[in-house]
Image (cartoon, rainbow, N blue to C red; front, top):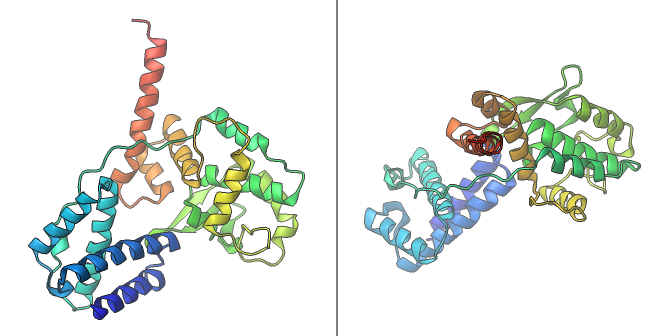
Length: 291
């Protein structure tokens, strides 16, 4: 089984160096594959000749853990991807996980902020200090671009086109796209560039130690900003991304454009936001149509 452990390490390095996957995604794959490795080890299964019966036993094991369908689907996807890597390397001749369907996911609507809640967050930030200006710009850029947190913290100064108010983003799987920001974000970007945070750094966003920000830095900042606000919505970096997409659709943007701006590979992924917009339409209809 040592060979499997070694192949997993090489596969994770491949995701990092070749495919430029985010640290969070790689950590998630690492945990899922470690769990699968433990299962294979306990059962005495040869991972190179795993069969349909072995897979059924693994799925039964996952079911007994009472995991959510989304968690099971993620684990299967991680294993399928690992075996496709082994296939591409010529280590195996067939990937049995390509014939295994993911369980049907529970429909979970993304939470997002109302315009009033977003305004409360922005207005609560004290911009009399460089840190406050940075924090305001961080929220403005989340809302203006719809970027993932991993994408936002990796924005370099050289990625920004100040004339067009656009930013080159390197997304999942090293897929490049262009996002845009508006006049409000530009105001705070200009203010931020005058602060001590912008001294000879190639990255746009820096933490209080003047190092490139981590995902954890951003999460701490957002928790700090909203801690004293009586918001109904739980706010995370992804909440701001959801808010960006939902507000666009509520204001008439077409779903294909939203897909491009979010950097979704599939339109199906973006489709979840139409459920939110439809709920909003239904709410407006019921409130305004007396009959």
